[in-house]
Length: 114
Image (cartoon, rainbow, N blue to C red):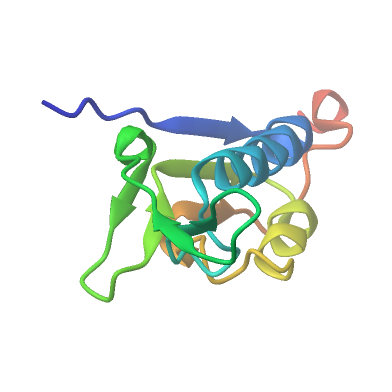
């Protein structure tokens, strides 16, 4: 039985830290920046490739019908710049836009507005 883990990145720090974490998950589980699983690796000094049988990443990712693995992740920020940075990075194809929520105005000096 596969368990599902959902990560949540809130604010600039949460989003930037979450983005770095997903880059590390990708490297550890052979997920390419476009969300495709690179299931072959070189084995020893020969040039033969060996198929990887790693399925442990399925608790972090959801597979789409096109064979792409997208993170079980939600990014939320009131300021659009940080979310836009993630959506314009080389990992932009991996993050569904509907799971990257952004506001139109930042929260700077909110305490003085009301």
